[in-house]
Amino acid sequence: MTSQTTTADAAGTWDLGDLRVNRIGFGAMRLPQTGEAFAQDAVPRDRGQAIGVLRRAVELGVNHIDTAAFYFSPLRSANELIRTALAPYPEDLVITTKVGPGRAPSGEWLEHATPELLRGQVEENLRQLGRDHLDVVNLRIVGTASIAERFGALAELRDAGLVRHLGISNVTPEHLAEARAIAPVVCVQNMYGIGVRPEHDGFVRACGEQGIAFVPFYSIAGTGRQAGASGTEHEEVRAVARAHGASPAQVRLAWTLARGPHVLAIPGTGDPDHLEANVAAGALRLSAEERSVLEAVHHG
Image 1 (tube, rainbow, N blue to C red):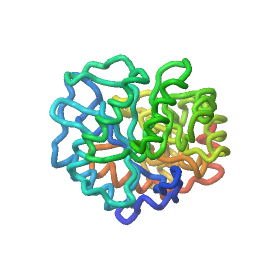
Image 2 (cartoon, rainbow, N blue to C red; image 1 turned 180 degrees about the vertical axis):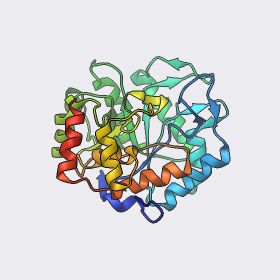
Image 3 (cartoon, one colour; image 1 turned 180 degrees about the horizontal axis):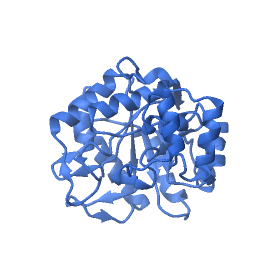
Image 4 (cartoon, rainbow, N blue to C red; image 1 turned 90 degrees about the vertical axis):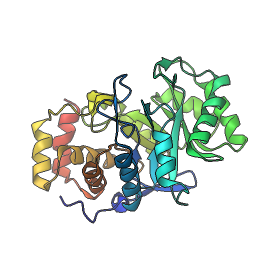
């Protein structure tokens, strides 16, 4: 499929609270380095290339960028790259960040933040991005323990005006119910894609029924996670891709978008050609038969 003229509004829009975004967005995790994210020996990405990709994304209509203060490699910080490339920010640009995990300046992972430390993480994002408030902050968690205290701390920062909207990441339906009892939730960000967590299908639908965006991550990489796609692919996915003159990655993105109008995509890349292809995936429409074939792959 051609990507030259496709822009990020091809898949439609969704509202994160009072912020309208195109459903095809951009994830910043891969910007600071080439190869695997968070690797101690990661090779910093060429600065000019990273800045160019961000500016091209906005030219293509991307107005939803997902980032985090812990997205950095030796020499490169995703937030700093975003600020350099895009500030002063376009009025319609929504920057979503996440807190909870932390990394020492040398790159080692720290314990997830306690409620008392979350304000410092929010302020770190504010400083790096050059903002006086954050559009959307996701509480990223690990495990199944209660999130009430941590989400409550973010709700206080929302009340104080440092944060506009709140979301949660890597969570269960129980976490969502717990969070919604404290403050409005505009998005859920979980790992999801073809063949990845089919047991979350109901959760994806439930988010839509509650008017909450579902934002899958690793929808292209799958179990490759931060290392990226493995290079192997189901023949059924390849066949659908061939029928559309598309890549398997584009089919995977189109499949997630077809799960409902509330599903947003945040594919990440530092490659200008991959960026164009990812945005173009928003125009790919799967037939009922193709969705059925892919559904069978999804459920194994």
